Image (cartoon, rainbow, N blue to C red; front, side, top):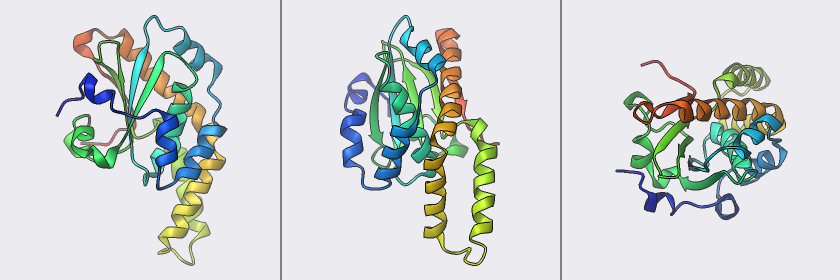
Length: 204
């Protein structure tokens, strides 16, 4: 299965995608509103020689997607040089997995950056590496807070989501700077060495 230009153009804009979300709509919208795009990141994209296309495979149930998707979409909607096309990953599992190694199949969210010829420049998987220590701290804190009821998954998920919203501005800066880095790398690579890859990594 290929991500063709025709397929890309079937994706939704932020304005059309968000209202139709069924899960985690409010925290995603809250994070989108809270994120401030760092000036140096915005200036980089505003001054690109050619515009780029951003394909987003979002999963509404995914914790990392709650933070990462609205953050990167805030950037895309803030510059004319990064046009987003959003897909519900659960409706595009096979296509999304073509951008993942076998040992990471079904990882979400996935962000694909394409040039004006719809050729892949970069991909960003899951979330920023720099968030991993902060995510570990969040999970450890919540584990202690819920120690009397460790099996209450709904409570734990709710606390994680609330924490993500509270940290949206700080975490957003980390995500956007790492996203910029992978795009910079991809644009500087020869065509035959693309895409650059960023985001989290898992051992093989």
